[in-house]
View 1 (spheres, rainbow, N blue to C red):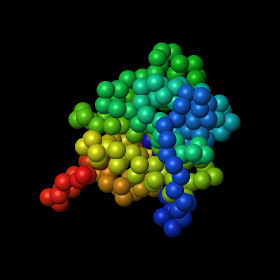
View 2 (view 1 turned 180 degrees about the vertical axis):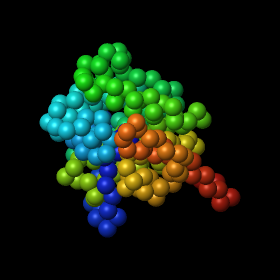
View 3 (view 1 turned 180 degrees about the horizontal axis):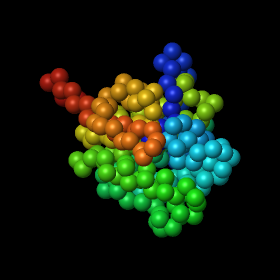
View 4 (view 1 turned 135 degrees about the vertical axis):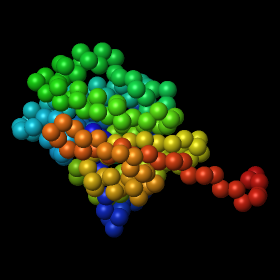
Length: 218
């Protein structure tokens, strides 16, 4: 699942908001934002079909687990009013899982465990080996989607990655989000087909080259 609850309308862009790193006291707010953003969509319908109320109970705990892990091992960027969040993992943390992940996932997913495990396995099989930063989740609150917040969050982190000359990788969970990422320099590298379910698109972004006009900065 990327894990990218984002819609984009370039004609509707709110004034820029400052972006900062989330702190541990915001764990609940971050996890609930992620759950709200990903509650609906092709992957969500496949993971927990049927009752949205049952899905919400699962997602709320599922994203607590991941938000807690990201605050420990990754980078969690939020805007000031906590309506947009981006969860990134650095190269050294990619491939890891939250502590006691298998036990937690079994407890959280319940009868839907097999689908969650299939999702994990499919994404792991497609994950590239070259060093990169991994965008695990990009989420915008449903009431603020389509207003350019996800675009600003991407631009913020991409500027940092370009300075580091570090590539980025993600999985887009629907065609609309795939097109958003294409507009930000990502390229589709394949297709992940979930068993009897929707597709995700693995995507790779090369860092923008440093510009050198022959002048020293000082």
